[in-house]
Image: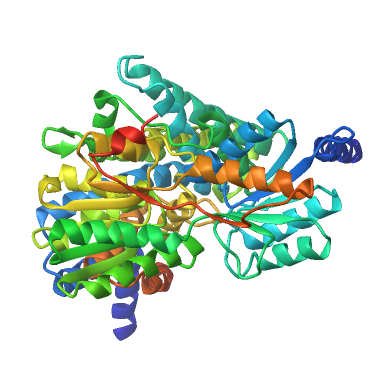
Amino acid sequence: MSSLKANALSAFLIKYGILIAFLVICILLSIATPFFFTSQNILIVLRQVSINGILAIGVTFVIITGGIDLSLGSVLALTGVVAAGFAHPDTYPLIVPIGLALMTGLIIGAANGFIITLGKVAPFIVTLGMMTIARGLALVWSGGRPVTNLSPAFNYIGGGDFLFIPVPILLFLLVIILSGVTLKYTRIGRYIYAVGGNEEAARASGIRVNRVKLFAYILCGLLAGLAGVVLAARINTGQPNAGIAYELDAIAAVVIGGTSLMGGRGSIMGTVIGVLIIGVINNGLDLLNVSSYYQQIVKGVIIIGAVLLDRRGG
Amino acid sequence: MKVNTVYLLLFAGLLFFSCNQGAKKGEDGQIVIGASMLSLQSEFVVNVKDAMEAYAREKGIRLIVSDAQRTADKQVQQIEALISQKVDAIILNPCEVEASSPAVEKAKAAGIPLINVNSETTAVPDGFVGSHDEESGEIAMEEIARRLGGKGNIVIMDGYMGQAAQIKRAIGAKKILEKYPGIKVLAEQTAEWDRAKAMSLMENWIQSYGNQLNAVFAHNDEMGMGALQALEQAGLKDKVVVVSIDAIADALQAVKAGRLDATVYQDAKGEGEGAVEMAIKMAKHEPIEKTSVFIPFQLVTRDNVDAFLK
């Protein structure tokens, strides 16, 4: 009887462990500070997490295939300065900076994907190399200086509201929906799980494994490009040194969300909750004015704790 | 696989030699000066480097610049490389007060004159052109105190914790705060020199201190600009004074537009040119009047911003 109860409990935790962790953190923060659970603050948290959220969703695809992308933060900076370079007032229509940034992200993602699949080099190494290449390109393009003086239309993407909702949040939502549907309901989505679960079996069953992986890296690069646009628009600048270590926050969110670094297991919703957990922690610790030194420790403990709770359940 | 390895080795070799070629001593008689800069991802340091290069070109000397990427260990290695290339003089833009000191001692042991530009090391170099970073924190905080009439609530955004610039700017600010007991620091937190992080931090602070806040002091303009944007979005800029340091182009524009209240200017051109000039003299063994040249910081407000905008 009691073991049955325990089983039911563990089944419940498997399914909702990470969600429960998120709610517990939110409740604790609401008790600790009256400024946390206000509509204004919630909107602020959502706006702050949009960039990491878009990055994390992109890398979720890659991680489910069993890969990794360490170049995200640098690609974010590169696409940001590329977009900013074409976003000065009265120069090009808005589509040009956005299109070029997305294109840049896509090309970097494709380069990662081709070298990993055709060159048969470990994703960790390829994307580690790409991390410094993209950072270098960002510095070359911008001459090491922030690219400023951007048009109001461009800045609207990062700071504007549409139907009372900040544009970055809307973009994040759109990415959640499209990627969630892709991963869950399309053939390529199922292939991504298959490739990550057992590459040999996937190949034997006729799945073109290289193509599936290439798709994941291209999508990841493309979304990093979108995040780069949002970031540049949010801070009204293309920063060549922006986004340092952002890939770690993105990967942390994915892992917190229950996606296995070994591949084959994971979900967009999990990643979104992972992103939110990191977001409310950052926000909450600032609201509570926890010292910078302790913030880093607390963040790390909560990340490990959340995953531990999830694994206990599993 | 084998062939690939051979190609890779060949490629690496070529890369190595082509790099070495570039770092070789100049033609007969030409003076060669080597430099190791704190970080070429920082706009201010890039400005110093540009001034050094322009001045070196004007004087017909060769300047080798390397980027220490904020790592003292890397900086010491770069100085070692410059020593083994037997350059005529070295310009060091130190990463750290203590940890970059071995670089100074190594140049001294090799008999190559070394000049510190911008900031100091514990080990005493042959020459110094720069400023006391504490002074920038003092000037910025003094301006905040003046604008608040010596009374009010402020928040402070620190640079990357533990870096020389962060430590010194914080010391300078603290020194002034001791004079004004009426100014209360509600919160102090790092935003790691980063505009995006500063914006998020300010948004969070607005939630907890929005109505009580009178001023923000940011250790650099990037963070100051991030704080400014968050305050503007929240419609609070009219009530809150924002002062930061560096006088980067963007910040100067913001001061001119009346958005940023003040920034503190550090003379990148003066520092870069001064350092190269001193290095040339030392390389030629010419007499030098002053081996320590201090270039003061200057407060930039709307009243005098035009003089700083190029």
